[in-house]
Amino acid sequence: MKNMKKSSLIILIAVIAVLFVIIPIAGTASLLGMITLMCLYLAMSQMWNLLGGYAGMLSLGMQAFIGIGGYTLTILSVRYGVNIYLSIIIGAVICALFGLAVSPAIFKMSGVYFAIGTWIVAEALNVFFSNWKFVDYAKDWSINTVFSMSGKQLYYTALIVAVLATLIVYILLRTKTGLALMAIRDSASAAETMGVEIFKTKLKCYVIACFMMGLIGGAQYMQTAYINPSTGFSINWTIAMTFAVIIGGLGTMEGPIVGSVLYVIITQVMYNFPGMSNIVLGIIAIVVILLAPDGIMGTLYKKTGFQILSPRRSIPNISAAANSVPK
Image 1: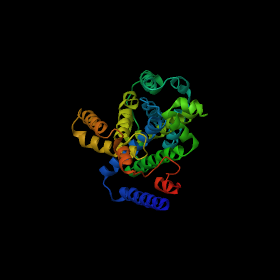
Image 2: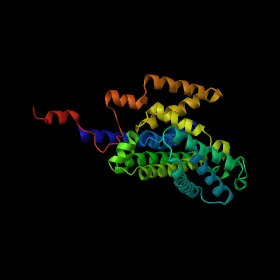
Image 3: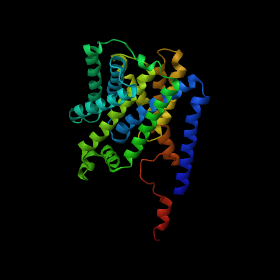
Image 4: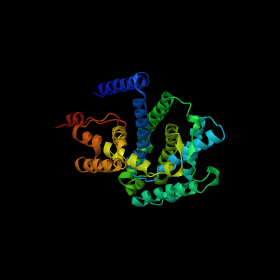
């Protein structure tokens, strides 16, 4: 049974890989752009889900790192002529260092206070960048270094970031650190009693998420091609991540994937109805929360046991275990 599941997973991954290779060749420019956005939002949602769904750190301020990543890409590539991909990596490193610097303060908070604390950090960065002469205050920066890049280049960049984010979460959760994170989420006091180093475990997770958000922010602004403080540090980034994870399933690997696809489709459909997009998203979120509190994939898993990417090292065979018990 276990070998059959592994072979089915390998076949599924192979089919998806072939589809992602074919899309840039056979797909239209609009389809390519939509899939690119799905990949970027998927990566964002995986990182938000890592913090909120698996570590119990519900953040409302991950846009801080998207903004830092976007601005690093812009300043280094436009003003100083640094290679665009090197600029993205440098932005990710800066994000990790910034996350490391603010962690002692925000880790003293928990629950809703942690969420508010992270949001305040993002808002403070918005104000700071709007009044920072080095970035020309609240100037709209045109990222002209990406104008020569083709849609295929942007697509493959977004795809690599999405795959990397998913792999990092998958691998991390199957380590001792991942088990510790889920233990802290379920009961911090019990985890501490069992010898889990709460601060160090949370710090590892947070710094990884900050680094990846920096990469994602750089890749996102390669696609957007302009930035200013109000867009770079906008709460709308976190709204998108939260929606995708809640709809798809908080604390599941597949949830952010399904939620991101739905989010991009809905926003693209609602593009011609300005101001209505957030209302429609809110209504959909409320309906899903009422009918399927665990999200689409979470509810599917509870009812059928269907799960492609399990965070556990192995899934116990309950029926086999029951049969092996002497009667």
